[in-house]
Length: 56
Image 1 (spheres, rainbow, N blue to C red):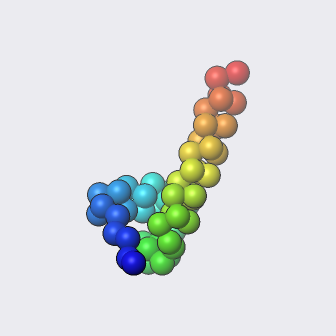
Image 2 (cartoon, helix red, strand yellow):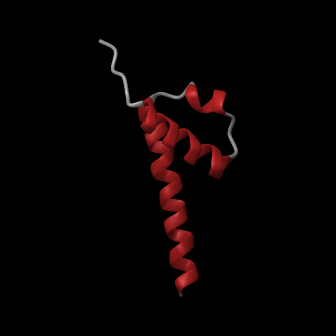
């Protein structure tokens, strides 16, 4: 069974990863959806730690 994800969600994940890690679209699209979501989560954690350290 193949699962499809909304195109807007895939575009948002790709843009987020590309913006922060400067990976090419091709490199991002070969990742599984789960891997992309994982990287989005990791980038978000990095951003949260940076923001928290700036608030101190």
